[in-house]
Image 1: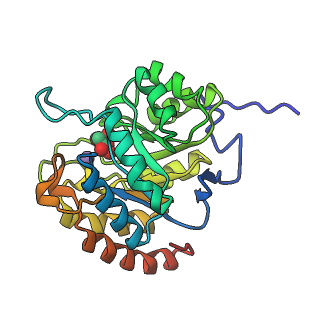
Image 2 (image 1 turned 180 degrees about the vertical axis):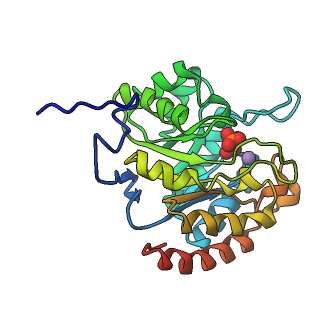
Length: 278
Ligand code: PEP
Ligand code: MN
């Protein structure tokens, strides 16, 4: 049968696929009834920091871990990430807990090393949401992709970026709202909660929220997380550091291990209220 899809984005559109897509990440479902919280440090620093992080992520009840080895920094003089060595530390740390790893890909030249370390989920950061050549390349890889929203990207531009990935054959795409830039300066970015129901209507793909880069302060993270789950997000991407004040990057927004545990405790009730599990 033939289906005429009028929208510019076709594969990712709900018109082409009515049911929610559930993405399998090393046996963990994302996009189904169960909410997934991906936690970990902003960046990979040392083996000890990663080992501790993995332990705390696991103890808090999270099933996936984040951490950047290649970092997009505003200043060229700021810490740029540990690179390949960082992926090695991340793999070693996550291994004992069987935590799938989520890490940012900035350049097509890093794809081989990502495959070598069998990265479970490729994160495309805000600054690369419209790096179309990068999107085309991840479209050819058989790995789930978290596509973060561009700093000032419209929903339609974001959906089109996902379509670039999907057009290459990779349909395992997860949207991540991480706050947008507005006139407001009291917080890092404005969490666009409205984007959650709008995306859920427009696409069958999972939608997660990064409350850490949205608020930019650790104390805002629990409230924004609760709002995200209440609004229908399928998961969260949260920054946690074993010792936030020592973090090499994004120290202000990192939760302590105890704060992550507390957050997981609170989210269960919100998840239950909207018919989801945690
Ligand atoms: C990150 O998740 O570490 C990151 C750099 O986020 P964003 O691309 O949303 O700024
Ligand atoms: Mn960060």
